[in-house]
Length: 166
Image (tube, rainbow, N blue to C red; front, side, top):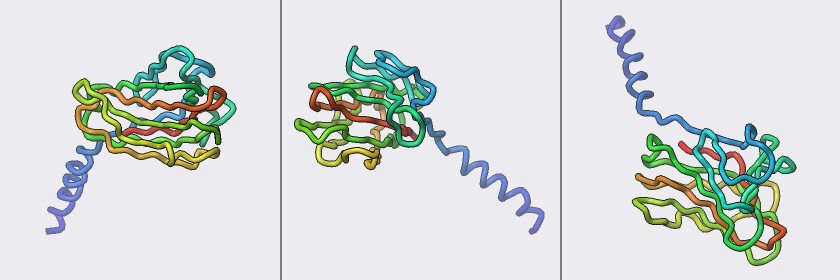
């Protein structure tokens, strides 16, 4: 019986761990500081219209850089999920409201089968300063793009850091 247990436990562990999906994370540490319209990270390919997003080195949660979704009306950044990641997943990040002013709207959406779906509404949830808000959202199967968007006073915005998809 002892001999059988020697090989049984490693086989069970191998089978159990083979179904674990690897997490992809980014704190934007390897990204160039400043505005961007396209950015590659381990999480995926990020895109934004000119003036909507930048990498900020003056604020961060754990590292020394974060994503700044800049102030203004309907600012957005999207991240394309690689095909191997289009299974049910959890997408999480730290967020910081960078203004007390109004208006303040924040949305997190996923594009599934060509249609955008609201996955999270943070208007009254995202806290002011300090990256105190952890957002964790289940992403539906088949989601190929995610969008973070906000409307804030022009001189403000939303800071995003510690992004993880698993």
